[in-house]
Every structure is written in structure tokens, then in C-alpha cells.
Image (cartoon, one colour):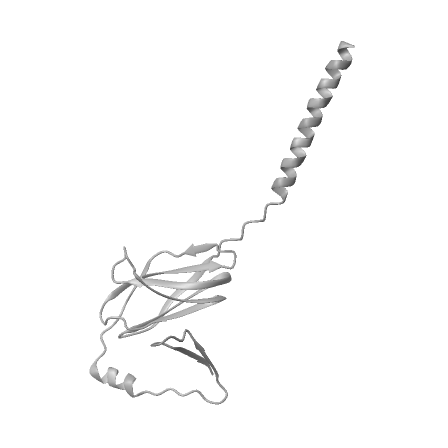
Length: 165
């Protein structure tokens, strides 16, 4: 009788361990997989002229994109971006001061809310001559009928217009 009681108790304990283990495994298996963090590559600064510069970069997955920038690396209090999910990003910074060094980084966030922030980089604006300023003012770029024209980021004072030709 004693042997049967001992065996019965051992069997009950083993059964509890199996049941508890099965519940824990089932609970962990039900957890959603964490989204992959975006990877930022090919950060470039182009079209630097007087008071503007264009920052472009790519990501390994569709993300939003924001450029944080400023004259002081520690604050970079200005930002401009795009809330559309895409892999190739381009942001044109306007109203920059001439002959200044700007600090910037880019932030990309995917649909799973995973975010990556780049290192901080710099670029310098140049001082345009009066003739260059007049030339830029006098230029008028009009899209042709074969061009795709898009308008994005319209507010009371700003509209971003883009096209491909």
C-alpha cells in the first residue's frame, strides 16, 4: 500500500509538471513576433544652395522619414518629414541660413512602430552671389503634359510640389 501511495504521488507531481510546461509553451507560442527594426543606408546631401539642401536616404523596408536638423548638434530642434511608408526618402530643407554648418540625422519608423535613428551628420550652406540669387529667382520651372505632378504636405503657408519627367 505504501508503494502504491508513493507511486501515485510521483505520478501526480509528474502530471502537474507536464501540464504546467504545456501551458507555458502554449503561452509563449502565442506571442506575436517583434517587427524587424529598419536599416538606414545611403544617406546623402545634395542640391545645397544658399538657403536649401536636400537630404535623401534608403531603408530596407517601408518606413516614414523625418530629418531633424539645426545649427547646434545637441538640440537639432527643427524637423521635416514624410508620413508615407516608403523605402526611398527625400526631404528638402528650405529657409536655411547661408554660410552655416548644419547638423542633422534621419529617423525612420516602420508600420510596426520600430524606429531607427541615424548618426549625426553635417553639411554647410554656401553664400550665393547676388547674380546667383537673381538667376534662381528668375527661373520658372513648369511641368510638361508628360510629367507626373504630385502635391503633398499642403498647409496654410506651405505646399510641397514634386514631379517626374
